[in-house]
Amino acid sequence: MGVVYLLDSDTATPRAIAAKTFRPEFPLSEIVSELNIWLDLSHPNILRLESITVLDFDTAAVSPWRRRGSLHEQLVTKRTLDHSEVKQILADATAALQYAWETKHIVHLDIKPQNMLRSDVPWKVIEISDWGLARISSETELQRAKISTKSVHLASTFAGTVPYMSPERFITGIPSTVQADIFSLGIIAIECLTGTLPFTHETNLIEQILSGVYVQRSTQAIERFSGRWRQFLSRCLAFDQRQRFDNYPEMQHALGRL
Image (cartoon, rainbow, N blue to C red; front, side, top):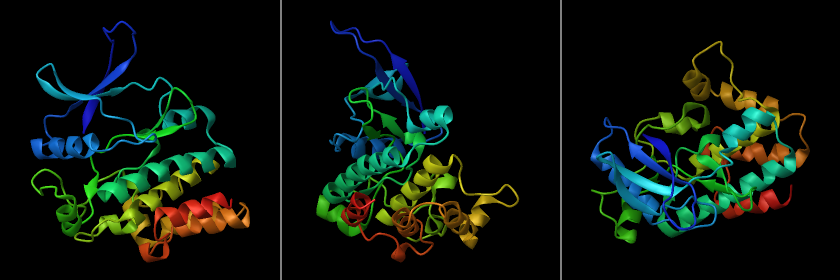
């Protein structure tokens, strides 16, 4: 949805800050939606939005710059991570997503390694960024949160990063729930543990997801893991969202047993 710039700080204690500007093809409603959601989120595992400003006549969201980069950059360097690292990544991510869900009834809908930043201190802490596709889950919850539908979008449209999207996300009119983000976390765990995503280049990726081949290959990828890891990831990646973890506390309890 935008371009992120690294800016120098002119304060007495210099520190790097990031400014995200938004691509001109995205309507103002999309920009306002992201900023409304992001401004309202305050959690140790969520990259904080410090201010909104104007940069070269464009609206810009200002946040801390994370020098250690994202989980994606770490995977490019290391290819695979050990089980303890993956467990901590999932714990941090679920803490952030549980907070967003329980306090604002928000689903992220674009969980991927590029949106999981490494905090500077302590460096292993994951911070979830880029809430541009995040959505309030239902009209009822919008009313409960007293948020206008004119400023925040509902989770019922197709958008995201295909390799990390759950099957139901491709079906028009099906509202997205926490189970969509749980599926994404399962795919990320497999990518971290095996060094690859569970798809083949032989057919269209969306077709693989909708046909169940993607989930089948995911199951094959975790066959060599311990029984508890296999059970945990199978719950994350169930083709039917009703068979995934019901909520984040249930997922966190299972994480604690790994």
